[in-house]
Length: 116
Image 1 (cartoon, rainbow, N blue to C red):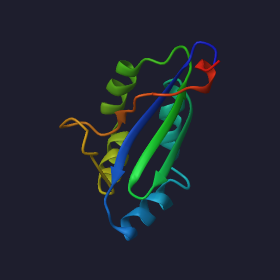
Image 2 (image 1 turned 60 degrees about the horizontal axis):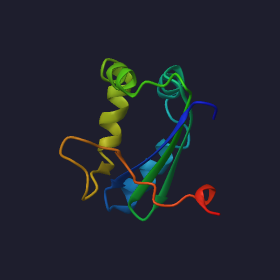
Image 3 (image 1 turned 135 degrees about the horizontal axis):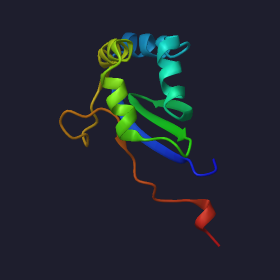
Image 4 (image 1 turned 45 degrees about the vertical axis):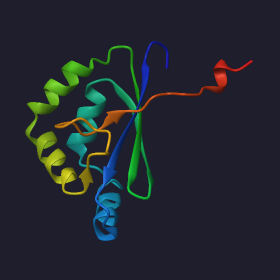
């Protein structure tokens, strides 16, 4: 990862099997504009895991990744905003998510690398 960073974030889905199935389907092949936007802003890889209604996203970035610049560019990108609005149909905040936010950082409490 050489200078990059890993982000692990959580978000929930609506507790509705049909909506969860639709969300999964949307993520089988995201819109090409969304993938291009992520890569253009230094996101090297992104994975989303699902357990019940809890989503966990793992994102690896390059050394040049700037979260503030990425967020500003996302707000100004009509296709990204269209995607985000569509995804919010399926998503909902976790009980620990501050008002007005979506994906929230998770706290790393263990790393095998740090163990003797």
